[in-house]
Length: 124
Image 1 (cartoon, rainbow, N blue to C red):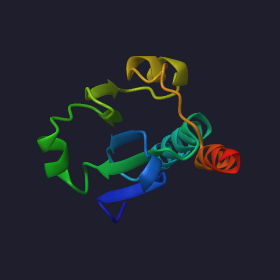
Image 2: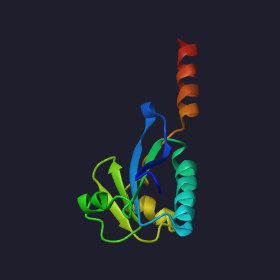
Image 3: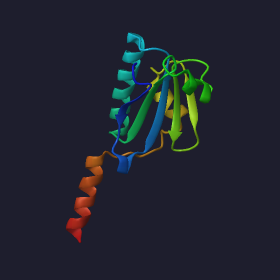
Image 4: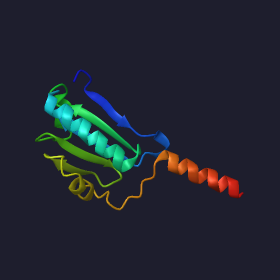
């Protein structure tokens, strides 16, 4: 990865509900596949209401040291608080949601929020 801080997917600023950092080691095809699968999962789960930043600790070892990254991949939930980490296998999607404490969040897509706001305006 040429860019040490690459935003893979960023939800709309006004309705961002989940902020994640994913630390990987190198731009291998394995990590590119993991990132793409995880991005697809996030999109289907949070409908664009998330931000995922991918950091490569090979290109930017200081980022790994600052966050005390011991193994990759490491996923860190930054928001909503509290910060939580998952190290290793990211294929168990339901486990990840529960481990990060996100299973009870009701996250609507931007389109759903706009539709609701428009309906309220019509009623007024």
